[in-house]
Image (cartoon, helix red, strand yellow):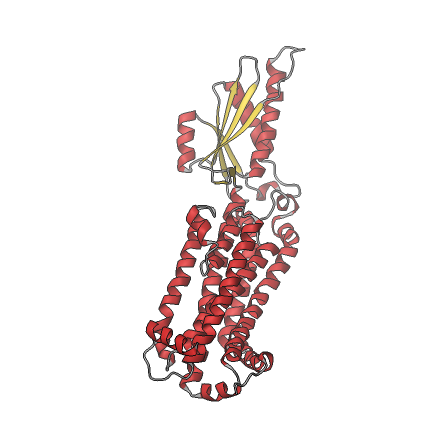
Length: 437
């Protein structure tokens, strides 16, 4: 009669052994420390960007046909934008803005080449009302744009007092933001700070998923192949079912990966919790509140954790069944290449999605197709607007794929663990699966 043993006890023993062996290895400890440092660096990157940004000098070109308007605009902009922060000594402070007059054609050429950071065009309507346009290459810094809009209002007041007779009505100056070469998300301009930060985070997360899926998957395959080559598998298969062994392998190494993920996420969340205080200590109270700091969020960390675990589970099941078909660990290179290419394809598709703002028909399709969805859907979440039902559907399809792959992997594993002396290949997989069925 067939022997039916409970799933949890033997699978749990295998899982605990795998977890213990992996988490105590020097490679696991060293990689965890490196990834923790990377996570902290990513969480604090916006503060560093803001810190170095305050050390840069912004050049603004003022374009107007009237000499009086030019003089007033230069004076008001300099007074408003180049005021030193409170409590900072003047000798140690460098004005962050250089404001000068230029003609329109030359200033626009300089804007496109990066010689100036913004162009302020000031014109007067026949009614006397001023019209002021603030042009930037890409969507400019929101804090600076707000300061320039205040300066525009001040310029209108000053011009009205200087040039209009008493009793004439005051016309609020028209102020427009005219960015050029602006990326959009669903038709709306994307804030450059947010776009750059989320794209950077997306690249880090996608690279982490790619590396961890391949490394942890190879751990599973190597462990199976090593046990098989040393004949330990013959003893283990007599004490536990193939389903229990496969489950233990995947769960044990998956828990090791989850431990590493928590070691990365916990300090990153801690840095997020104190991000405002850190920014205030580094930048000072005045600059820390200038613009929201865009960094890691608990939602993004949760998305990374979900897609990492599901992606790892899918690939680990395939790697485990693959490892059962080799007689020596050296033979793994032959079978690991197709899986590595699949993971690489998902990685490249995700990088393309990050560069394209998460859009595109092919990108949208791949975000629902396992095994590409763990990479591509995460990239879409990082850089664009994704409907909740899309994320839910992607996860549901990924879970369904895991269930199907698990059923096939168990059959392949059961047929392959005691198969010695045969060259691994597609025919061997198919024949073994049929015999196991």
